[in-house]
Length: 156
Image 1 (cartoon, rainbow, N blue to C red):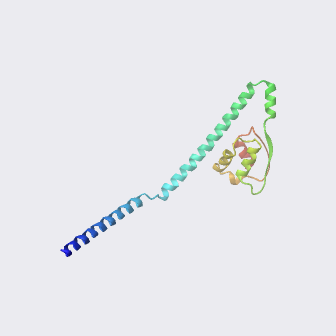
Image 2 (spheres, one colour):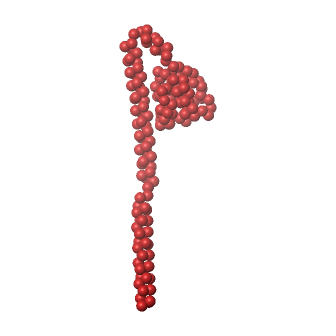
Image 3 (cartoon, rainbow, N blue to C red):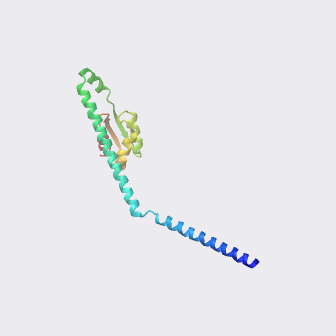
């Protein structure tokens, strides 16, 4: 009788071990099929770059539209108000030193009220590949310039 119970116990133990091994193998198969290939990773990175470029272009379009709207509203305002408004246009001489980053330059431009948002300028320079092409020097900039115009000026 003891031998029969022992054999049944061993059989149950082996059956349980077999189920555990099977479950372990199935779990491993599922995780191994969900790996990311280099090709899909590179494709996702390219799509991200394309989206960033589109975003930069849309930001430029928005800035140009805002400036056009500002210019249109300036034309409809009486000349006395227009003269007052032109005096409030911000301008500055931006001095770019060796080692300055695009984020530092963008912050200076925002502080001087040349641009509305330093993050937009920094993203534009990065997305267009211009952040590494910024030239040391002094540049005359004003708030009527678009992000693109500012970028072209400081990367010549």
